[in-house]
Length: 74
Image (tube, rainbow, N blue to C red; front, side):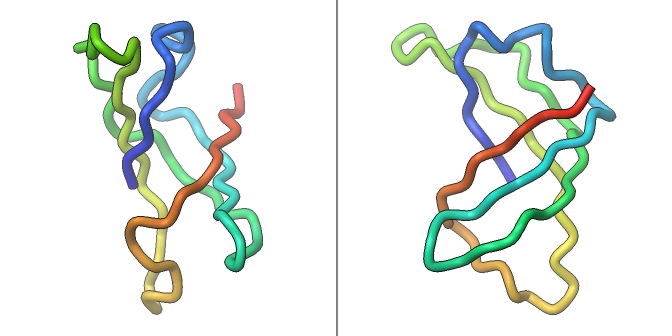
């Protein structure tokens, strides 16, 4: 999965960190994810950068494109 974070988080999120993903309603639950890529290029217009996380979804129960929140551990 890919998330967009504010530039204030740059340097605080690192590859290998774990995150807890909460999906937007009507989906529910918390899902463990692993940070695999932290983009080092900031979008100057929005003041954001991208982070890619690996979120297991073996049965395809989590649809693509759903808004979510991520809480990073560590």
